[in-house]
Image 1 (cartoon, helix red, strand yellow):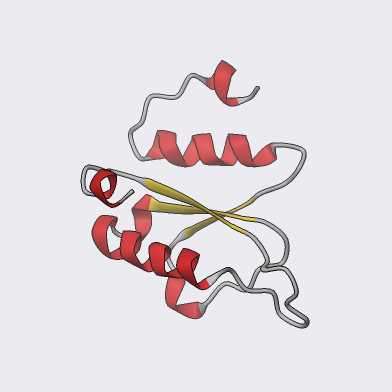
Image 2: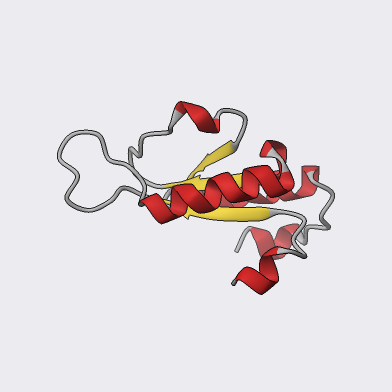
Length: 97
């Protein structure tokens, strides 16, 4: 994974509640570390997080794009919009499958 990180232009991370958290679910620490790395490497505006469940969003990560990861698949459209805005070519027919 580390070799591939250096040629990236955009990074997408998936974040969900950590199992067993009693009060305020949080993402695993390694995911937050990766999030911080990509924020520094690419800039906050080029990082998108797919958020599942009611995961706490740390205040340090303001400015990052947070997209709800819903089972119905609405997240695909939101993610495709963000990639399109970042300059990627989107095949909307494939994106909505």
